[in-house]
Length: 152
Image (cartoon, rainbow, N blue to C red; front, side, top):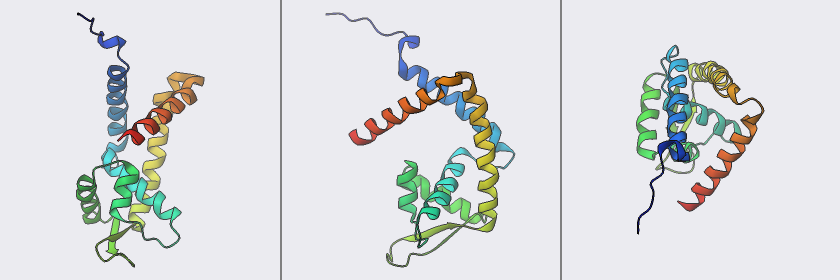
C-alpha cells in the first residue's frame, strides 16, 4: 500500500510554522527597543494580568507558567532574570511556604505598559493583511488551542 505525502504548501502545520516564525520575528524586532524578549514579555504581561485578577496579590510562579503555557523551569529562569533587572518582586507566599508571590515593580509596570502598546501595534500591522478575516483566524486558533489543551 502506498500513500502520497502532502506537499508543504498542503500542510496546515507547515503554514502555521511559517506564519508563527514571521510573527515572532516581527515581535522580536518590535520589542528590541525595550531590550525585552518575547518570553519575557509574555511572563511580564501574564504576571500583570493575573495580579490584576487576584485581590490578594498572591500569584505564584507556577500559576504564571501554567497560564502562559510555558515550561515551569523556563518560567523560573526568566522570572529570576526579570527580578535581577528590577522588573518584578518575588516574596514569601502568604499561605504556601514552598511558593513565592510574584508581582511587578513600578519599573516592571512601566515596561509592560510600553511593551503592550508596542505589541498591540505590531499585531495590528501584522494581522491587518487579513482584513475582516482576523476574527475568523482568532476564533479558529482559540478552538484549536482549546482542543489541544484538553488532549494533553
